[in-house]
Length: 222
Ligand code: SF4
Image (cartoon, rainbow, N blue to C red; front, side):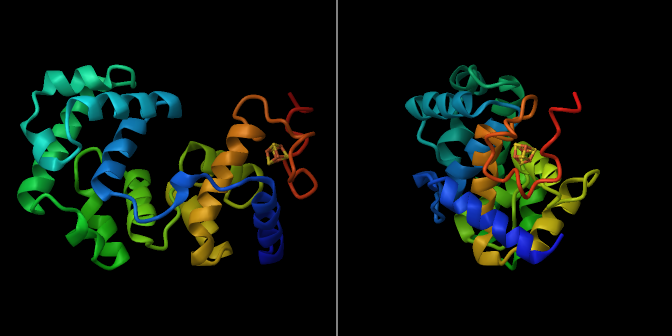
């Protein structure tokens, strides 16, 4: 895998897709954290609906969610999967942020990347993807979140090791790209995964990357 090929892939992705508004960095860290917890094992549309339902019931702040009844949080999250667990986690994480970090994630986000990542990973419900989303989108830290689309697409495109775990794929992508491109790359791989490189039926014939992709015959082999 050469950097040239990796660059070409990024160029084609940039010319194929328009980056949506939600890709801007400087998002509200707490709301981003809550959205990412809701999104675990949940389709994007249901994540958005659950967040909206929750926002109608409560202000999305550590204080409001710490004081909220778990059953009321559950009501808001019903449309998302595993809503009971998520309601419990959201309440716990809100309480910790309120009590240990004075209700603000800024103190964590101002730490150096590895320290900030380690601190976020100690919070309930926060795994590597959630931590990396908050770090990249809310603090412009140089890390690439590897969600289900990024993982699948990177492996098919040979941008990441085919049997690699989360860290192996993240490190491989980060070694191939310039940190200033981490955020657009993350988003563009998701857009490719949603539109062409779908999990079950990838649309390789229409895919703008098919001349560069070693997996372009993936469907022929089924
Ligand atoms: S050619 Fe097929 S496998 Fe390769 S990135 Fe495109 S859709 Fe995915």
